[in-house]
Image (cartoon, rainbow, N blue to C red; front, side, top):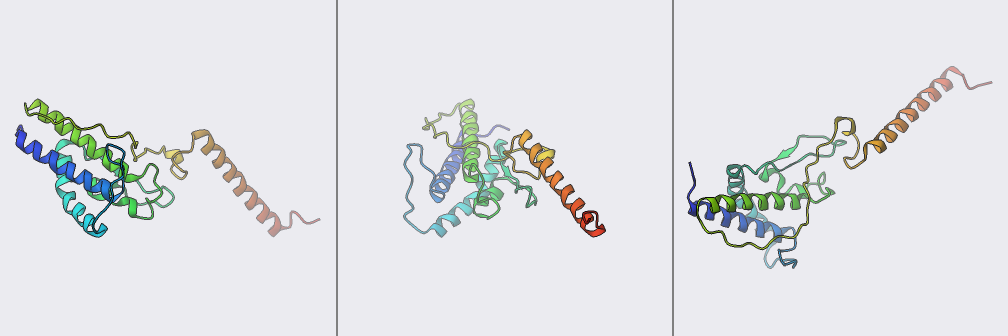
Length: 190
């Protein structure tokens, strides 16, 4: 069933409001490059964003763009966080604080993708789309697929580097075991 142009415009307005609040909360530069300044309470803004998360996630699910997610580092482990509501404030959790690029930029990218899908849908339905300024290119996807052989290493290691590190770790383990056994059984005494 095709949605009406008014419903699509309403969704676009809600997502744009969410994006501006979210951008303000994390001090991400606006489209013109200026960094917004928070005039009120940071906690009140956080509560406003929390109230907007449900409708925003529903809009993203309807548009088919709610595939955003993050995986905790392999050394720590844990379940992935999937969807807008689960990843919106993941940056504030110590596990994800050092993510590169920052997770909030991936969230904004996903919201901008949804806005593009909705504007295209509005254009196809015959409604007029306002010309939105092009946002600055500031982020790349935050969710990386880690090969099974590299799950215990940092995801940005090249494969050859991971192989070298793994080989050195294996040889060091063998040396420790042989050294311990040699000391216990007196292999090294004269």
